[in-house]
Structure formats: C-alpha cells, structure tokens
Image (cartoon, rainbow, N blue to C red; front, side, top):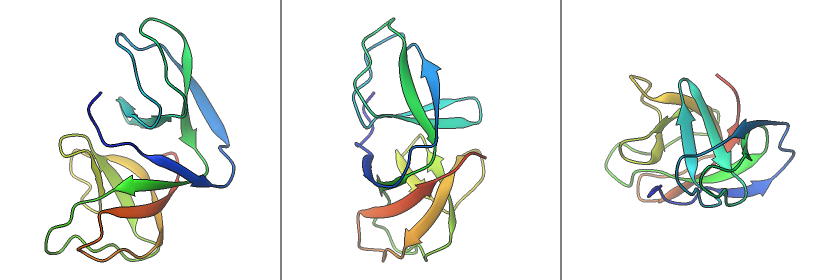
Length: 117
C-alpha cells in the first residue's frame, strides 16, 4: 500500500478484525474492506493473518492542505482512498471517525477518534 502512514496517538484500540492481505501491509497503512476502514498497527506479511484496528483510539491522519480543507473539532470525517487522506466529504468515501482537535487548511495532519460506521 502506498498511503501515508496513520499513526496511533493515544487511547484504547477497542476492536480489531483479522485480516489476511494478498501483499504485505506496513504498520500505519489504511485498509478499506467494503464499508470497513481499518489500520494496520503492525506490519502484516502477504498471505499471513494479522489484525486491523477498526474502532477506538485517537489517530494522527493525513489530510488535504488545500483551500477549504480545514476541519473543526467534532467533524465526522471519511477515508478518501483515492487521495489517501481524511475528509469531511462523504460521497463514496468510508466513515473513519471524528476530529478531536481542529486543523487549519494549511495543516497536513489531524487527530481523529476512530469509530465504526
């Protein structure tokens, strides 16, 4: 996976799901399966069972740095797999969580509490 690394910030990773990737997954990679968005907290070798954090904890996530990309605390954000960032735009994007600390348009990361859709 080529997406920027999502980093665990603090809290409890409440729920994990088994995941067997077809190719290696690095720690911090975001994996979308249907409507579920998970984060690999450890590297997972190809064709080996690993786990994805799917609910809980606060994560430092990449976000766009374009005009209008500011995110206020409490905003529900989605994972944009095409651009590999969290965004407030739902559309075809999958639910990721809630912003816990506001991030201005020029800021490249945002803290997000991970929740199930």
